[in-house]
Length: 189
Length: 176
Image (cartoon, rainbow over all chains, first blue to last red; front, top):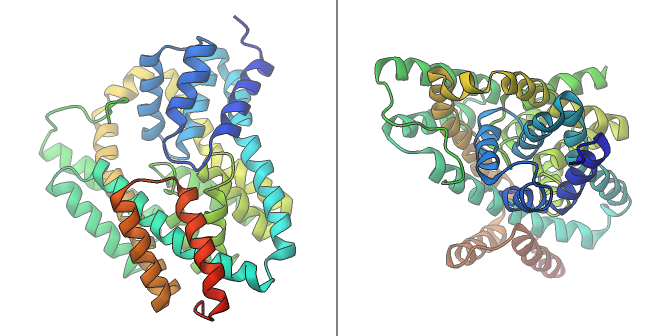
C-alpha cells in the first residue's frame, strides 16, 4: 500500500478541495477517501479520530488529518496530511481576497454584502444552536453556558480566559461529582 | 512587528478554540474589537466568503483575517500559527492515545469546554444582531430564520438569498 508523502498529500488535498461550507461534511468525505478508496483506516478508526479531533483545540478537520497522517507515516505523514488539507483553503482565500479588494468599493457589491451580513448572523445563530444541542446536557453545562455568555457579552473578557476558567470549573466539579458515563463519543452524536 | 503579533494572536486562537467550524469566531471578534486589524463588518464579509469557499471554515477565515491584516505574508503566518498548536498537540496525544482517551481530567475539561465555547459563540451572535442589523435587516433575519426552522439548508442557500435581497434592497435605499 502506497503511503508516500506525495500520496498522503494528494489524498488530503482532494478532501480539502471538496470540503465546502464547513460544518461536519468532513466525516463522509474522509469515509469515502480514506476508508473506502484507500483502505488506510477502518470506519471505527475514523470515528475514533472524529471524537479525538473534537477533544483537541483547533480546527477539527485539521486535527483529524494530522491524527490520520501521523498514524500512516509518523511526522512525515502528519505534515503531508495537514499541508494537503490547508492548501486549497489558503489558495482559494488569497485569490478571492485579492479580487475582492478591487471590487469591494462598488455600490452594488456593498449592497450584496449588506444582505450577506444578515445571512451570516443567521449562520452564527444556527451554529450556536447546533453546539447547544451537543453540549448543554445538564444543569452544570447550562450554568457554564450562561457564565461564558455573560462574561463575554457584558464584560468583554477574553475568550481564552473564559475557556481556561471553564476547564478549571469542569475539573473541580468532576472531583466533587464524578461522571456516570463516558463523554468522548464517536460518530453516534 | 505586525507579523509577530499575528503569530501570537493566531497561535492563541489555535490553542484555545474548541468545537470546529465557527469556534474561532469569538476570538477573531475579540481581535477586531481590541487590535483593530479589521472591522466587525470586514469580519462578517470574511465569514460569508469562508463559508462558501473550499476548505475548513476555520482555516479559511484565519487565512482571510491574516491577509486583510498584512497581505500574503500575513495570511501565511496566520494560517501556520492557527494550525501549529493542533499539530504539536495531536502528535503528542498520538503517542499517549490510550492515556488521553481514558483520562478523567481530559473528559471533565471537554465536558465544561463545549458549553463555554457555545456561550462565546452566542455572545457573538447577539452582538452581531444588535450592531449590524437595521429594521429591514431584522425582518430579513426573521424570514431567514423561519426558512431554516422549516427545513435545513446549506450555508450557500441562505447566503444566496440574503445576497439577492441585499442587492434589491440597495435600490430602495433600505441597506443604510
